[in-house]
Amino acid sequence: MKNIIKVCTVLFFTSLLVSCEEEFLDAPAKSTLDESTIFSTVDLAKGAVDGILEPMGQTNSYRGRFIPYYGFNTDVEYNYSAGDEGSDADLVYYDAKPNNSRMNTDNNAWAMMYQGIERANIVIRGIRNFGNPEPGNEFGQLLGAALTYRAVYYADLMKAWGDVPARFEPITSETLYLPKTSRDSIYKKLIADLGEAATLVAWPNETAATTSVERINKAFVKGFRARLAMVAAGYQQYPDGVRRSNDPDLSVEKMYSLALEEARSVINSGRAHLEPSFEGFWRKYNTENTNAGGESLWEIPFADGRGRVLFSFAVRHRSVDQFTGQPRGGTAGPTPTVFYDFDEDDTRRDVTAVPFQWGTAVDGIAQQELTGIDMWYFGKYRYEWMDRYVTSTNDDGVNLIYMRYAEVLLTAAEAANELEGPGAAAPYLKEIRRRAFPSGLHAEKVDAYVDALGSKEEMFDAIVEEYKYEFTGEMDRKMDLIRWNLLSEKLEEEKQELENLENRTGDYANVPTTLYYKYADDGYTLIVYGLNRGETGNPGPEYSAFPWDQPLDEIQNTLVKPGVDPDNRQFWPIWQVFIDASNGQLVNDYGY
Image: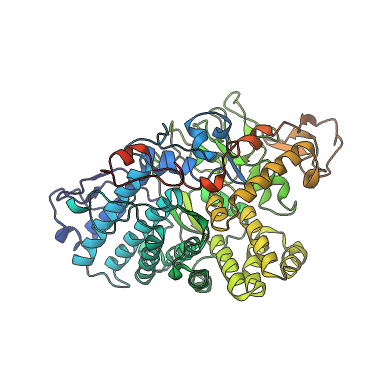
Protein backbone atom coordinates (compact mmCIF):
# COMPACT_ATOMS: atom_id res chain seq x y z
CA MET A 1 0.00 0.00 0.00
CA LYS A 2 1.31 3.39 -1.01
CA ASN A 3 1.92 5.61 2.01
CA ILE A 4 0.35 8.99 1.51
CA ILE A 5 0.20 12.47 2.96
CA LYS A 6 -3.28 13.51 3.92
CA VAL A 7 -4.39 16.78 5.42
CA CYS A 8 -3.25 17.16 9.02
CA THR A 9 -4.83 19.35 11.66
CA VAL A 10 -2.03 21.45 13.07
CA LEU A 11 -1.99 24.20 15.69
CA PHE A 12 1.53 25.43 16.11
CA PHE A 13 2.24 28.27 18.54
CA THR A 14 -0.19 26.68 21.03
CA SER A 15 -0.14 23.45 23.04
CA LEU A 16 -1.01 21.17 20.10
CA LEU A 17 1.77 20.03 17.81
CA VAL A 18 0.48 17.72 15.14
CA SER A 19 -2.30 15.21 14.68
CA CYS A 20 -2.61 13.51 11.33
CA GLU A 21 -5.16 11.20 9.82
CA GLU A 22 -2.91 9.20 7.58
CA GLU A 23 -2.77 5.64 6.32
CA PHE A 24 0.50 4.96 8.05
CA LEU A 25 -0.46 6.70 11.31
CA ASP A 26 -2.16 4.73 14.04
CA ALA A 27 -1.90 7.45 16.71
CA PRO A 28 -5.23 9.08 17.58
CA ALA A 29 -5.67 12.84 17.35
CA LYS A 30 -4.90 14.44 20.72
CA SER A 31 -5.11 18.19 20.97
CA THR A 32 -4.18 18.69 24.62
CA LEU A 33 -0.81 16.97 24.79
CA ASP A 34 2.36 18.91 25.49
CA GLU A 35 5.77 18.39 23.99
CA SER A 36 7.04 16.17 26.78
CA THR A 37 4.27 13.65 26.08
CA ILE A 38 4.32 13.84 22.29
CA PHE A 39 8.07 13.55 21.87
CA SER A 40 8.59 10.83 24.42
CA THR A 41 6.03 8.62 22.66
CA VAL A 42 7.20 7.06 19.40
CA ASP A 43 3.83 6.92 17.64
CA LEU A 44 2.94 10.49 18.55
CA ALA A 45 6.37 11.74 17.55
CA LYS A 46 6.05 9.85 14.27
CA GLY A 47 2.79 11.68 13.58
CA ALA A 48 4.49 15.01 14.24
CA VAL A 49 7.32 14.15 11.85
CA ASP A 50 4.85 13.13 9.14
CA GLY A 51 3.04 16.42 9.66
CA ILE A 52 6.14 18.33 8.57
CA LEU A 53 5.40 17.35 4.97
CA GLU A 54 1.68 18.16 4.99
CA PRO A 55 2.13 21.75 3.73
CA MET A 56 3.57 20.36 0.49
CA GLY A 57 0.13 19.03 -0.43
CA GLN A 58 -1.64 22.37 -0.24
CA THR A 59 -2.93 23.71 -3.55
CA ASN A 60 -0.80 26.86 -3.58
CA SER A 61 2.29 25.05 -2.31
CA TYR A 62 4.35 22.34 -4.02
CA ARG A 63 1.22 20.66 -5.32
CA GLY A 64 -0.18 23.40 -7.52
CA ARG A 65 2.48 26.12 -7.69
CA PHE A 66 6.08 25.15 -6.98
CA ILE A 67 6.21 21.85 -8.88
CA PRO A 68 4.27 23.02 -11.97
CA TYR A 69 6.24 26.27 -12.43
CA TYR A 70 9.71 26.11 -10.90
CA GLY A 71 12.50 24.84 -13.15
CA PHE A 72 11.37 26.36 -16.47
CA ASN A 73 12.50 27.31 -19.02
CA THR A 74 15.80 25.62 -19.89
CA ASP A 75 17.61 24.41 -22.97
CA VAL A 76 15.69 21.13 -22.68
CA GLU A 77 12.38 21.98 -20.96
CA TYR A 78 9.68 24.38 -22.12
CA ASN A 79 6.49 25.34 -20.32
CA TYR A 80 3.73 26.02 -22.83
CA SER A 81 2.42 28.86 -20.65
CA ALA A 82 5.41 30.85 -21.91
CA GLY A 83 3.62 31.31 -25.21
CA ASP A 84 0.87 33.34 -23.54
CA GLU A 85 1.08 36.77 -21.93
CA GLY A 86 0.27 36.80 -18.24
CA SER A 87 1.33 35.65 -14.80
CA ASP A 88 2.10 32.05 -15.77
CA ALA A 89 4.34 33.15 -18.62
CA ASP A 90 6.17 35.55 -16.32
CA LEU A 91 7.04 32.72 -13.94
CA VAL A 92 8.64 30.49 -16.55
CA TYR A 93 10.35 32.87 -18.96
CA TYR A 94 12.32 34.88 -16.41
CA ASP A 95 10.06 37.89 -15.88
CA ALA A 96 8.29 37.15 -12.59
CA LYS A 97 7.08 40.19 -10.66
CA PRO A 98 6.40 40.53 -6.90
CA ASN A 99 2.67 40.99 -7.52
CA ASN A 100 2.35 37.93 -9.79
CA SER A 101 -1.33 37.00 -9.59
CA ARG A 102 -0.61 33.26 -9.58
CA MET A 103 1.80 33.48 -6.64
CA ASN A 104 1.05 36.61 -4.62
CA THR A 105 -1.14 35.00 -1.96
CA ASP A 106 -0.49 34.56 1.74
CA ASN A 107 -0.80 30.76 1.45
CA ASN A 108 1.67 30.44 -1.41
CA ALA A 109 4.66 28.07 -1.56
CA TRP A 110 6.86 30.54 0.36
CA ALA A 111 4.45 30.52 3.30
CA MET A 112 3.89 26.76 3.14
CA MET A 113 7.64 26.09 3.10
CA TYR A 114 8.07 28.18 6.22
CA GLN A 115 5.11 26.43 7.82
CA GLY A 116 6.88 23.14 7.18
CA ILE A 117 10.11 24.58 8.60
CA GLU A 118 8.31 25.74 11.74
CA ARG A 119 6.84 22.29 12.23
CA ALA A 120 10.28 20.78 11.76
CA ASN A 121 11.81 23.18 14.26
CA ILE A 122 9.27 22.22 16.92
CA VAL A 123 9.73 18.51 16.20
CA ILE A 124 13.53 18.75 16.29
CA ARG A 125 13.45 20.59 19.61
CA GLY A 126 10.94 18.15 21.06
CA ILE A 127 12.78 14.98 20.04
CA ARG A 128 16.12 16.34 21.26
CA ASN A 129 14.60 17.26 24.62
CA PHE A 130 12.35 14.27 25.24
CA GLY A 131 13.06 11.48 22.78
CA ASN A 132 16.64 10.31 23.49
CA PRO A 133 17.55 10.09 19.79
CA GLU A 134 20.50 7.83 19.00
CA PRO A 135 21.75 6.06 15.88
CA GLY A 136 19.76 2.87 15.49
CA ASN A 137 16.78 3.76 17.66
CA GLU A 138 13.36 4.98 16.52
CA PHE A 139 13.78 8.47 17.86
CA GLY A 140 17.09 8.76 16.03
CA GLN A 141 15.38 7.82 12.77
CA LEU A 142 12.66 10.40 13.43
CA LEU A 143 15.11 13.16 14.28
CA GLY A 144 17.10 12.38 11.14
CA ALA A 145 13.93 12.58 9.08
CA ALA A 146 12.94 15.92 10.62
CA LEU A 147 16.38 17.40 9.99
CA THR A 148 16.20 16.21 6.37
CA TYR A 149 12.69 17.53 5.76
CA ARG A 150 13.77 20.93 7.07
CA ALA A 151 16.77 20.84 4.73
CA VAL A 152 14.48 20.02 1.78
CA TYR A 153 12.33 23.07 2.48
CA TYR A 154 15.34 25.35 2.82
CA ALA A 155 17.04 23.95 -0.27
CA ASP A 156 13.94 24.65 -2.33
CA LEU A 157 13.51 28.12 -0.84
CA MET A 158 17.06 29.06 -1.80
CA LYS A 159 16.72 27.41 -5.21
CA ALA A 160 13.75 29.65 -5.98
CA TRP A 161 14.53 32.84 -4.04
CA GLY A 162 18.25 32.95 -3.19
CA ASP A 163 18.84 34.56 0.21
CA VAL A 164 15.93 33.92 2.58
CA PRO A 165 15.25 34.33 6.33
CA ALA A 166 16.86 31.60 8.42
CA ARG A 167 14.76 30.07 11.17
CA PHE A 168 16.27 27.09 12.97
CA GLU A 169 14.36 27.49 16.22
CA PRO A 170 10.59 27.76 16.81
CA ILE A 171 9.22 31.26 16.40
CA THR A 172 9.06 33.57 19.40
CA SER A 173 7.72 37.10 19.68
CA GLU A 174 11.30 38.34 19.32
CA THR A 175 11.88 36.40 16.08
CA LEU A 176 8.51 36.93 14.42
CA TYR A 177 10.06 39.26 11.83
CA LEU A 178 13.45 38.44 10.39
CA PRO A 179 15.48 39.85 7.49
CA LYS A 180 17.06 37.68 4.85
CA THR A 181 20.14 35.66 5.78
CA SER A 182 23.07 34.94 3.50
CA ARG A 183 22.40 31.61 1.84
CA ASP A 184 26.04 30.70 2.45
CA SER A 185 25.39 30.36 6.19
CA ILE A 186 22.18 28.43 5.54
CA TYR A 187 23.96 25.99 3.24
CA LYS A 188 26.60 25.38 5.89
CA LYS A 189 23.91 24.71 8.50
CA LEU A 190 22.02 22.32 6.22
CA ILE A 191 25.16 20.43 5.27
CA ALA A 192 25.99 20.01 8.97
CA ASP A 193 22.42 18.93 9.76
CA LEU A 194 22.47 16.35 6.99
CA GLY A 195 25.78 15.07 8.28
CA GLU A 196 24.09 14.42 11.61
CA ALA A 197 21.00 12.96 9.97
CA ALA A 198 23.16 10.50 8.02
CA THR A 199 24.40 9.05 11.32
CA LEU A 200 20.85 8.64 12.62
CA VAL A 201 18.81 7.15 9.78
CA ALA A 202 19.09 3.63 8.37
CA TRP A 203 20.01 2.52 4.88
CA PRO A 204 17.17 1.52 2.53
CA ASN A 205 15.54 -1.70 3.78
CA GLU A 206 17.86 -1.86 6.79
CA THR A 207 14.90 -1.31 9.12
CA ALA A 208 11.12 -1.33 8.88
CA ALA A 209 11.24 2.49 8.78
CA THR A 210 13.21 2.57 5.52
CA THR A 211 11.39 0.07 3.30
CA SER A 212 9.57 2.78 1.32
CA VAL A 213 10.92 5.59 -0.84
CA GLU A 214 8.38 7.79 0.93
CA ARG A 215 10.53 7.56 4.06
CA ILE A 216 13.93 9.09 4.67
CA ASN A 217 16.92 6.77 4.40
CA LYS A 218 20.69 7.11 4.57
CA ALA A 219 21.22 6.81 0.81
CA PHE A 220 18.98 9.80 0.18
CA VAL A 221 20.43 11.88 3.00
CA LYS A 222 23.96 11.36 1.75
CA GLY A 223 22.99 11.95 -1.87
CA PHE A 224 21.07 15.09 -0.93
CA ARG A 225 24.03 16.32 1.13
CA ALA A 226 26.26 15.81 -1.92
CA ARG A 227 23.80 17.79 -4.07
CA LEU A 228 23.76 20.71 -1.64
CA ALA A 229 27.55 20.74 -1.47
CA MET A 230 27.76 21.01 -5.25
CA VAL A 231 25.17 23.80 -5.33
CA ALA A 232 26.78 25.72 -2.46
CA ALA A 233 30.15 25.68 -4.26
CA GLY A 234 28.62 26.54 -7.61
CA TYR A 235 27.82 29.77 -9.37
CA GLN A 236 24.63 31.63 -8.54
CA GLN A 237 23.25 35.13 -8.54
CA TYR A 238 24.15 37.18 -5.49
CA PRO A 239 23.03 40.79 -4.99
CA ASP A 240 26.43 41.86 -6.39
CA GLY A 241 26.37 39.56 -9.43
CA VAL A 242 26.74 35.95 -10.59
CA ARG A 243 29.69 34.28 -8.85
CA ARG A 244 30.76 31.49 -6.55
CA SER A 245 30.55 31.94 -2.80
CA ASN A 246 33.35 33.93 -1.17
CA ASP A 247 33.11 31.80 1.98
CA PRO A 248 36.23 29.60 2.20
CA ASP A 249 34.13 26.87 3.85
CA LEU A 250 32.17 26.61 0.59
CA SER A 251 35.16 26.42 -1.72
CA VAL A 252 35.10 24.05 -4.69
CA GLU A 253 37.82 21.94 -3.15
CA LYS A 254 36.02 21.49 0.18
CA MET A 255 32.51 21.06 -1.15
CA TYR A 256 33.42 18.81 -4.08
CA SER A 257 35.47 16.65 -1.71
CA LEU A 258 32.48 16.32 0.60
CA ALA A 259 30.16 15.56 -2.33
CA LEU A 260 32.50 12.92 -3.71
CA GLU A 261 32.86 11.29 -0.30
CA GLU A 262 29.09 11.12 0.21
CA ALA A 263 28.38 9.94 -3.33
CA ARG A 264 30.98 7.21 -3.10
CA SER A 265 29.56 6.17 0.25
CA VAL A 266 26.17 5.59 -1.36
CA ILE A 267 27.68 3.84 -4.38
CA ASN A 268 29.87 1.57 -2.28
CA SER A 269 27.04 0.71 0.12
CA GLY A 270 25.24 -1.38 -2.48
CA ARG A 271 21.96 -0.18 -0.96
CA ALA A 272 20.75 1.58 -4.13
CA HIS A 273 21.21 0.91 -7.81
CA LEU A 274 20.08 1.81 -11.30
CA GLU A 275 17.11 -0.15 -12.53
CA PRO A 276 18.09 -2.51 -15.38
CA SER A 277 16.32 -0.44 -18.04
CA PHE A 278 15.47 3.24 -18.28
CA GLU A 279 11.95 2.58 -19.53
CA GLY A 280 11.51 -0.08 -16.87
CA PHE A 281 12.32 2.43 -14.16
CA TRP A 282 9.74 4.92 -15.38
CA ARG A 283 7.10 2.24 -15.82
CA LYS A 284 7.78 1.18 -12.22
CA TYR A 285 7.44 4.76 -11.05
CA ASN A 286 4.11 5.29 -12.82
CA THR A 287 2.72 2.12 -11.26
CA GLU A 288 3.50 3.76 -7.90
CA ASN A 289 5.90 1.09 -6.75
CA THR A 290 7.39 2.68 -3.63
CA ASN A 291 9.69 -0.12 -2.50
CA ALA A 292 13.04 1.24 -1.35
CA GLY A 293 16.45 -0.04 -2.38
CA GLY A 294 16.31 0.66 -6.11
CA GLU A 295 16.85 3.82 -8.11
CA SER A 296 14.41 6.21 -6.50
CA LEU A 297 15.97 7.48 -3.27
CA TRP A 298 13.15 9.65 -1.93
CA GLU A 299 9.79 10.83 -3.24
CA ILE A 300 7.42 13.52 -2.03
CA PRO A 301 4.42 11.36 -1.11
CA PHE A 302 1.06 12.52 -2.37
CA ALA A 303 -2.38 11.11 -1.65
CA ASP A 304 -4.62 10.07 -4.56
CA GLY A 305 -6.42 13.41 -4.14
CA ARG A 306 -3.24 15.46 -3.59
CA GLY A 307 -0.55 15.96 -6.17
CA ARG A 308 -0.45 17.08 -9.79
CA VAL A 309 2.67 15.58 -11.32
CA LEU A 310 0.91 13.72 -14.16
CA PHE A 311 -1.86 16.32 -14.20
CA SER A 312 0.85 18.83 -15.14
CA PHE A 313 3.52 16.90 -17.02
CA ALA A 314 2.14 13.65 -18.42
CA VAL A 315 1.65 12.92 -22.10
CA ARG A 316 -1.49 14.90 -22.96
CA HIS A 317 -4.89 13.20 -22.92
CA ARG A 318 -7.57 15.28 -24.65
CA SER A 319 -10.55 13.47 -23.17
CA VAL A 320 -11.60 10.75 -20.78
CA ASP A 321 -10.40 7.55 -22.39
CA GLN A 322 -9.36 3.95 -21.80
CA PHE A 323 -6.41 5.02 -19.65
CA THR A 324 -7.62 7.96 -17.57
CA GLY A 325 -10.73 9.66 -16.34
CA GLN A 326 -8.69 12.86 -16.02
CA PRO A 327 -8.12 14.50 -19.43
CA ARG A 328 -4.97 16.41 -18.54
CA GLY A 329 -1.19 16.47 -18.82
CA GLY A 330 0.92 18.31 -21.33
CA THR A 331 1.43 21.72 -19.71
CA ALA A 332 5.13 21.41 -20.55
CA GLY A 333 7.46 19.27 -22.59
CA PRO A 334 10.96 18.84 -24.00
CA THR A 335 12.19 21.55 -26.32
CA PRO A 336 11.88 20.35 -29.96
CA THR A 337 15.62 19.83 -30.30
CA VAL A 338 15.98 17.31 -27.47
CA PHE A 339 14.83 14.26 -29.38
CA TYR A 340 17.34 14.94 -32.15
CA ASP A 341 20.22 15.58 -29.76
CA PHE A 342 20.04 12.00 -28.50
CA ASP A 343 22.04 9.24 -30.10
CA GLU A 344 19.42 7.22 -31.99
CA ASP A 345 20.55 4.07 -30.15
CA ASP A 346 20.06 5.68 -26.73
CA THR A 347 17.11 3.94 -25.09
CA ARG A 348 16.36 7.05 -23.05
CA ARG A 349 15.30 9.03 -26.12
CA ASP A 350 11.85 7.58 -26.80
CA VAL A 351 10.99 7.64 -23.10
CA THR A 352 12.09 11.23 -22.62
CA ALA A 353 10.55 12.96 -25.65
CA VAL A 354 7.14 11.91 -27.01
CA PRO A 355 5.78 13.42 -30.27
CA PHE A 356 2.15 12.44 -29.74
CA GLN A 357 -0.88 13.05 -27.57
CA TRP A 358 -3.99 10.98 -26.92
CA GLY A 359 -6.82 12.44 -28.98
CA THR A 360 -10.52 12.70 -28.26
CA ALA A 361 -11.94 9.28 -27.46
CA VAL A 362 -14.56 7.61 -29.59
CA ASP A 363 -16.70 5.14 -27.64
CA GLY A 364 -14.21 5.50 -24.78
CA ILE A 365 -11.13 4.67 -26.85
CA ALA A 366 -8.54 7.31 -27.78
CA GLN A 367 -5.80 7.04 -30.37
CA GLN A 368 -2.31 8.45 -30.25
CA GLU A 369 -2.07 11.50 -32.52
CA LEU A 370 1.05 13.27 -33.79
CA THR A 371 1.24 16.81 -32.46
CA GLY A 372 3.87 18.49 -34.64
CA ILE A 373 7.56 19.14 -34.21
CA ASP A 374 6.68 22.23 -32.16
CA MET A 375 4.91 20.31 -29.36
CA TRP A 376 6.51 17.42 -27.50
CA TYR A 377 5.61 15.79 -24.20
CA PHE A 378 7.55 14.20 -21.36
CA GLY A 379 7.21 10.46 -21.82
CA LYS A 380 8.43 9.77 -18.29
CA TYR A 381 4.97 10.60 -16.97
CA ARG A 382 2.12 8.55 -18.43
CA TYR A 383 -1.42 7.83 -17.30
CA GLU A 384 -1.29 4.83 -19.60
CA TRP A 385 1.44 3.26 -17.46
CA MET A 386 -0.51 3.61 -14.22
CA ASP A 387 -2.23 0.74 -12.43
CA ARG A 388 -4.94 3.10 -11.15
CA TYR A 389 -7.60 4.75 -13.27
CA VAL A 390 -7.51 8.39 -12.19
CA THR A 391 -10.92 10.05 -11.88
CA SER A 392 -10.10 13.12 -9.78
CA THR A 393 -10.74 16.48 -11.43
CA ASN A 394 -7.46 18.12 -10.43
CA ASP A 395 -5.10 15.57 -8.87
CA ASP A 396 -3.49 12.30 -9.87
CA GLY A 397 -1.74 11.44 -6.58
CA VAL A 398 1.50 10.24 -8.19
CA ASN A 399 4.57 11.04 -6.11
CA LEU A 400 7.29 13.46 -7.18
CA ILE A 401 10.73 11.86 -7.41
CA TYR A 402 13.02 14.17 -5.47
CA MET A 403 16.25 12.29 -6.11
CA ARG A 404 17.33 9.13 -7.82
CA TYR A 405 20.53 7.12 -7.87
CA ALA A 406 21.53 8.30 -11.35
CA GLU A 407 22.20 11.74 -9.86
CA VAL A 408 24.53 10.22 -7.28
CA LEU A 409 26.56 8.64 -10.07
CA LEU A 410 26.79 11.87 -12.05
CA THR A 411 27.66 13.83 -8.92
CA ALA A 412 30.49 11.39 -8.30
CA ALA A 413 31.63 11.78 -11.91
CA GLU A 414 31.58 15.57 -11.78
CA ALA A 415 33.35 15.86 -8.43
CA ALA A 416 35.90 13.18 -9.26
CA ASN A 417 36.68 14.86 -12.57
CA GLU A 418 37.34 18.19 -10.85
CA LEU A 419 39.44 16.75 -8.02
CA GLU A 420 41.10 13.68 -9.53
CA GLY A 421 40.74 13.98 -13.29
CA PRO A 422 38.73 12.32 -16.05
CA GLY A 423 40.05 8.84 -15.36
CA ALA A 424 38.48 8.90 -11.90
CA ALA A 425 35.18 10.15 -13.32
CA ALA A 426 35.00 7.58 -16.12
CA PRO A 427 33.56 4.59 -14.19
CA TYR A 428 30.57 6.60 -12.99
CA LEU A 429 29.77 8.03 -16.41
CA LYS A 430 30.15 4.60 -17.94
CA GLU A 431 27.65 3.13 -15.50
CA ILE A 432 25.04 5.70 -16.55
CA ARG A 433 25.63 5.10 -20.26
CA ARG A 434 25.81 1.33 -19.90
CA ARG A 435 22.16 1.35 -18.84
CA ALA A 436 21.28 3.70 -21.71
CA PHE A 437 22.61 1.62 -24.62
CA PRO A 438 22.05 -2.00 -25.72
CA SER A 439 24.83 -4.32 -24.58
CA GLY A 440 26.04 -4.91 -28.12
CA LEU A 441 26.95 -1.21 -28.39
CA HIS A 442 28.78 -0.85 -25.08
CA ALA A 443 32.24 -1.10 -26.61
CA GLU A 444 31.53 1.86 -28.90
CA LYS A 445 28.94 3.98 -27.10
CA VAL A 446 30.18 3.48 -23.55
CA ASP A 447 33.83 2.46 -23.31
CA ALA A 448 35.26 4.13 -26.43
CA TYR A 449 33.14 7.24 -25.96
CA VAL A 450 34.12 7.79 -22.33
CA ASP A 451 37.76 6.76 -22.75
CA ALA A 452 38.16 9.39 -25.47
CA LEU A 453 37.38 12.16 -22.97
CA GLY A 454 41.00 12.88 -22.21
CA SER A 455 40.82 16.25 -20.46
CA LYS A 456 38.86 17.66 -17.54
CA GLU A 457 37.14 20.08 -19.90
CA GLU A 458 36.02 17.33 -22.27
CA MET A 459 34.77 15.21 -19.39
CA PHE A 460 32.90 18.14 -17.86
CA ASP A 461 31.20 18.95 -21.17
CA ALA A 462 30.20 15.30 -21.53
CA ILE A 463 28.75 15.27 -18.01
CA VAL A 464 26.71 18.40 -18.76
CA GLU A 465 25.30 16.63 -21.81
CA GLU A 466 24.67 13.43 -19.87
CA TYR A 467 22.59 15.32 -17.32
CA LYS A 468 20.44 16.41 -20.27
CA TYR A 469 19.96 12.90 -21.60
CA GLU A 470 19.26 11.46 -18.17
CA PHE A 471 17.13 14.13 -16.50
CA THR A 472 15.13 16.07 -19.10
CA GLY A 473 11.62 16.44 -17.73
CA GLU A 474 12.62 16.26 -14.08
CA MET A 475 13.04 20.04 -13.78
CA ASP A 476 16.49 19.99 -12.16
CA ARG A 477 18.24 21.39 -15.24
CA LYS A 478 17.75 25.05 -14.29
CA MET A 479 19.50 24.57 -10.95
CA ASP A 480 22.38 22.74 -12.62
CA LEU A 481 22.80 25.32 -15.39
CA ILE A 482 22.94 28.04 -12.76
CA ARG A 483 25.60 26.32 -10.67
CA TRP A 484 27.66 25.63 -13.81
CA ASN A 485 27.31 29.29 -14.87
CA LEU A 486 25.78 28.09 -18.12
CA LEU A 487 22.20 29.36 -17.85
CA SER A 488 22.35 32.25 -20.30
CA GLU A 489 24.82 30.49 -22.56
CA LYS A 490 22.71 27.35 -22.95
CA LEU A 491 19.48 29.30 -23.43
CA GLU A 492 21.11 31.36 -26.20
CA GLU A 493 22.46 28.20 -27.78
CA GLU A 494 19.01 26.63 -27.67
CA LYS A 495 17.41 29.60 -29.40
CA GLN A 496 19.92 29.22 -32.23
CA GLU A 497 19.38 25.47 -32.34
CA LEU A 498 15.62 25.99 -32.62
CA GLU A 499 16.23 28.23 -35.62
CA ASN A 500 18.54 25.61 -37.12
CA LEU A 501 15.96 22.89 -36.61
CA GLU A 502 13.20 24.95 -38.20
CA ASN A 503 15.39 25.69 -41.22
CA ARG A 504 16.97 22.20 -41.30
CA THR A 505 20.49 23.59 -41.10
CA GLY A 506 23.55 22.86 -38.97
CA ASP A 507 23.13 19.86 -36.68
CA TYR A 508 19.56 19.36 -37.90
CA ALA A 509 20.11 19.43 -41.66
CA ASN A 510 19.02 15.80 -42.14
CA VAL A 511 15.91 15.87 -39.93
CA PRO A 512 12.94 14.87 -42.15
CA THR A 513 10.17 17.35 -42.91
CA THR A 514 7.45 14.73 -43.35
CA LEU A 515 6.45 11.83 -41.10
CA TYR A 516 4.50 8.74 -42.15
CA TYR A 517 2.26 6.89 -39.74
CA LYS A 518 -0.14 4.00 -39.35
CA TYR A 519 -1.74 2.27 -36.38
CA ALA A 520 -0.72 -0.98 -34.77
CA ASP A 521 -3.11 -3.90 -34.51
CA ASP A 522 -4.54 -2.53 -31.26
CA GLY A 523 -6.01 0.36 -33.25
CA TYR A 524 -4.59 3.19 -31.14
CA THR A 525 -0.77 2.88 -30.97
CA LEU A 526 1.15 4.86 -33.59
CA ILE A 527 3.80 3.33 -35.81
CA VAL A 528 5.86 6.20 -37.20
CA TYR A 529 8.44 6.40 -39.95
CA GLY A 530 10.51 9.56 -40.44
CA LEU A 531 11.38 10.49 -36.86
CA ASN A 532 14.98 9.40 -37.27
CA ARG A 533 17.42 11.48 -39.25
CA GLY A 534 17.59 10.51 -42.89
CA GLU A 535 14.29 8.60 -42.89
CA THR A 536 12.80 10.08 -46.04
CA GLY A 537 10.46 8.73 -48.65
CA ASN A 538 7.08 7.07 -48.26
CA PRO A 539 7.44 3.64 -46.61
CA GLY A 540 4.27 2.25 -48.16
CA PRO A 541 0.64 2.86 -49.13
CA GLU A 542 -0.62 1.80 -45.71
CA TYR A 543 1.04 4.89 -44.18
CA SER A 544 -0.44 8.40 -44.06
CA ALA A 545 1.72 11.54 -44.36
CA PHE A 546 2.03 14.15 -41.62
CA PRO A 547 3.86 17.49 -42.04
CA TRP A 548 6.88 17.82 -39.75
CA ASP A 549 7.93 21.38 -40.48
CA GLN A 550 5.84 23.52 -38.13
CA PRO A 551 7.35 26.93 -37.24
CA LEU A 552 9.37 27.12 -34.02
CA ASP A 553 9.64 30.88 -33.67
CA GLU A 554 7.14 31.10 -30.79
CA ILE A 555 9.21 28.78 -28.63
CA GLN A 556 12.40 30.50 -29.73
CA ASN A 557 10.99 33.92 -28.76
CA THR A 558 9.44 32.86 -25.45
CA LEU A 559 12.09 30.53 -24.04
CA VAL A 560 13.22 33.75 -22.35
CA LYS A 561 11.17 36.93 -22.50
CA PRO A 562 12.70 39.19 -25.16
CA GLY A 563 14.98 41.78 -23.59
CA VAL A 564 15.50 39.84 -20.36
CA ASP A 565 18.89 38.50 -19.25
CA PRO A 566 18.15 35.25 -17.39
CA ASP A 567 21.33 35.65 -15.35
CA ASN A 568 19.70 38.74 -13.83
CA ARG A 569 16.57 36.71 -13.09
CA GLN A 570 17.88 33.43 -11.71
CA PHE A 571 15.45 33.71 -8.79
CA TRP A 572 11.83 34.63 -8.32
CA PRO A 573 11.13 37.80 -6.35
CA ILE A 574 9.68 37.50 -2.87
CA TRP A 575 5.96 38.01 -3.40
CA GLN A 576 4.60 41.38 -2.38
CA VAL A 577 2.23 39.97 0.23
CA PHE A 578 5.21 38.71 2.24
CA ILE A 579 7.16 41.94 1.77
CA ASP A 580 4.17 43.89 3.07
CA ALA A 581 3.74 41.61 6.09
CA SER A 582 7.42 41.64 7.10
CA ASN A 583 7.39 44.78 9.25
CA GLY A 584 9.97 46.28 6.91
CA GLN A 585 12.42 43.38 7.27
CA LEU A 586 12.17 41.86 3.79
CA VAL A 587 13.27 43.49 0.55
CA ASN A 588 13.81 42.22 -2.98
CA ASP A 589 17.23 42.25 -4.57
CA TYR A 590 18.32 41.56 -8.18
CA GLY A 591 16.62 44.67 -9.53
CA TYR A 592 13.06 43.68 -8.61
